[in-house]
Structure formats: C-alpha cells, structure tokens
Length: 385
Image 1: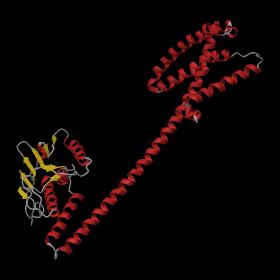
Image 2 (image 1 turned 135 degrees about the horizontal axis):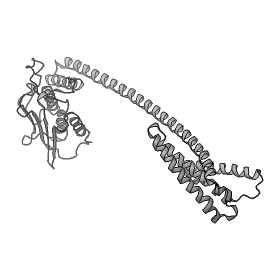
Image 3 (image 1 turned 45 degrees about the vertical axis):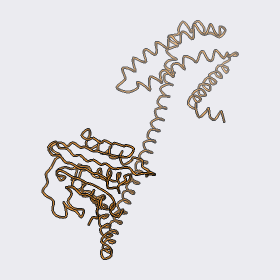
Image 4 (image 1 turned 120 degrees about the vertical axis):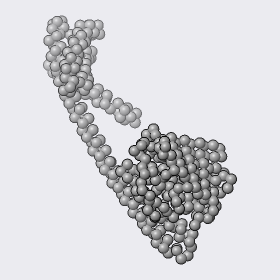
C-alpha cells in the first residue's frame, strides 16, 4: 500500500527515473558486448550527467521560449545554456571524475577535445529534449481538449437543466394562476372576503410572473407600489385584519423606474420577522420620490417578534445588494439598523436626469388597482374593503 501511495504521489518523477535507469542499462550492456570487462558504477553515472543536464535544460527552454514571438530569446538562451554546459562537461570530466574514480576517469585525449565531443553530446540530448517537449506538449494539448469537451458537455447539460427548470417554473405558476381564477369565480357567491383574497393573490402572482420590465430591466415605481398594496392586503386577510401597518407615499411614483421586486423583498422580510399586531408599534413604510434631487427613498421600521425566530439565510438581502450594485453602481445606499427590539431598513436611489420620466396619467384599471390609489397615506389597521 505504501508503494502504491508513493507511486501515485510521485508518478511523474518515478517514470523519469525508470526511463533513465533503462537507458543507462542499455548503454552498459552495449559496452559489455563491445568487450569492456569491467564497468564501474561511477563511470556510468558520471558519463551520463552531462547528457541529463542537457536534456532537462533544453526541455525547460523549449517549454518556456519555443514560440515565434520568443524565437530570439530562445536563441540567446540556447547559446548561454551551451556555454554553461561546456563548463559543466569540463567539471565532470576533468575535475570530478579524477577525484571520485581515478581508475575510470575520462581519457586525456577526450578531455583535450572536450569541445567537439561536448558539442556532439549537446546535439544528441537536445534532440531527445525536443522529442520529450513535443510528446509532453501533445499530451497536455489532448488533456486540455478533453477538459474543454467535458466543460462543454457540462455547460450543455446545465443549459438543458436550466431550460427544463424554467419550463417547469412557467407551467406550474400559470396553472396555479388559472386555477385561482377559477376558485375566485366559484367563491363570489359564498364569501366576499374569500373572493377578494383569491383575486388579490392572483394579482400578486400575475405581477411576479410578468412585471412588465422594459429593455433596461426596470418597471414603473407605481406598478411596484400597487404590488406592495396587494401584498399588504393579502397579509391582512391572512391575519384577520389585525396587522397594524402605516404606509405613507409622497411624490410622483409614476415619474421613476426601478428594478422590480426589490421593495417587496424588504416588505416581506418585515412581515416575516416583525411583531405587527400592536397599535403602539405598527409596521411603518415610508416611500418618497423627490424630483428636485432625483432621488427615491424607501424605509421600513418594525418591532421584532418575541420568542423563536424563523429560519433565515439572508439570501434575499444578498440578492438585493447584488442587483442594486449591478444596476445603480454607487448611486444607491442600503442601510440596515438591526437592534435588539427593532429592525429598520432604508434604501436611497439617486437617479440621473434621463432616468426621470413623466408618463401620461394611467387609465382607470391600469394606474389604479383593487388596493386603491398607489399614492397618499393608508393605515392598514382596519378592515379593507
């Protein structure tokens, strides 16, 4: 097991060691077959060191500089490397060999002509190094192509899954929306409160499915306000009109556009975590559009619930920050004040001149909704009819 573990960890190094051992063994056998009776181990190692030096040195240069744009640097590198190789070859043959193995040192004739013999060795092992570079590069290219193909297949699979999920997300809500409309028609003769609740839920789903963004991905703020009214109303119906909600709107909400479903996320967070049934601590919404300085300010304040808290991962708030940053860059401020008993959020968006608009007054049924006028002050602390 230990051997297998070492092999997996150092497989690349082990393959090189095995290759050189086999290469030296073949060379040794050739010497023996040529009639050389005594083969010294140091003779084998020392005579192969210059070749190994050339092989790995040239391989390094090829991997780093072998390209048309670096050809001059490769040529300079090869010249410098050849000079360093001659010094190394001289050191092995004339200095190290006589010290370590005097009886097997390189003959004087070879040392005197070490430039010629060194050049020959340099060319042979440079050729081996180029072959190694070519094989290694081909292997890496094949591996990279395989990885790209796997990534492409994974991307295509992810795209198919996303399209399938999107299709399911489209089918199920539309089916539920149509079913709710059917329930609304059937409930008209039985309970006005029930039919209003179903109709309001239909409006919420309709807006969530298609909020009517333009090319920039924004909607009229007035549409968002209508949606807020619907959500407040449906929550009042859920809690038998016991919620204390104070919603004040000032300014022309039809004069600006905003990315959809940002304000509603803040509102739903307040309904989820707030204590909203006490008159002295109502849920307070404030929405102000100021055309003088082209700004929108939306704030929420609520008292926290006592007892166990609902599980929250903060995904909604993180998503809001990302969307606001992507759309408004540094032209927004989102401040959160999280105290022991109270929670407050304020969002300020500064618009540019060309982002303010003055559309004509909306037609009845378009600019208004069952929740009433989208502007003004409404206190949701009594029955809503």
